[in-house]
Length: 332
Image 1 (cartoon, one colour):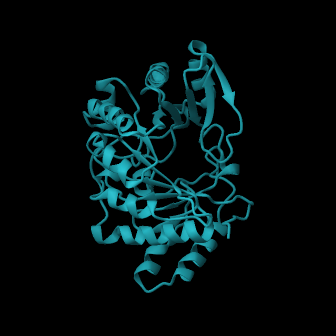
Image 2 (cartoon, rainbow, N blue to C red):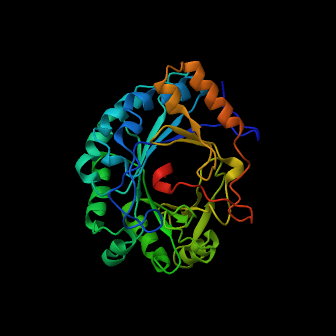
């Protein structure tokens, strides 16, 4: 049975936040101090995550599971969860694609273990290649460790590693070309992300958004590009370098929302089901998990939730309402 929302979109992607905690304090996501973390008893166990994931894969044909946070690698024994998810099978017997989004600070220590557990793909957040600026944006002096983690992930056998860079005007927009060159030189796909209103400190302003058109213009002036057609449900528009040295992407969440093709839903670390990153409503799966809910009860709640999925987040409209949780609390 496919999960189809009221706008005809089929859900194929489940984003799973495994923790709200993070070892960075990125300015576009979290305040420097003062975050109140969930008590461990409030966070879903691996077995609870596996149960929800199994229902999504086996009943609804969801074929992509992405682990996020907070920072997922701060969750103890993460490879064990990946092993559990890698054992799931779709109706045709195939394994769902399992991916991880990480800040990469500790990746060099566990990349091989993650690969062995069944992880298919890694996305690493990297917003600057300059140590002082990296420190200013993340409030952590970890650039060397992140770069080492990316190198180790390549060594561990991850063939497609994506590097995500949030571009904020006045903060790192003068590094667009440097980041593109880094991706070209290292066989990585850099994906630039427009600055979104999901920071805990409420610093977002529309004039801080560097748009997709601006980003592509900067890159193509130095490295000519050609569009990769048919984005489909993927969040990034992609371009090939004309000289054959790989690809680059932009996620234009603000200037060119991709809501019409969205195929994803989210499970927060405390067990709330969300149909959009910017949703203002959540559906409490944890209560069912911990109070005797059957698989049918959980499946029915998921079907109901997907039925409420809106047409789009309306960032560019006057009636846009910010979520009452930050990115780290929802799951990036």
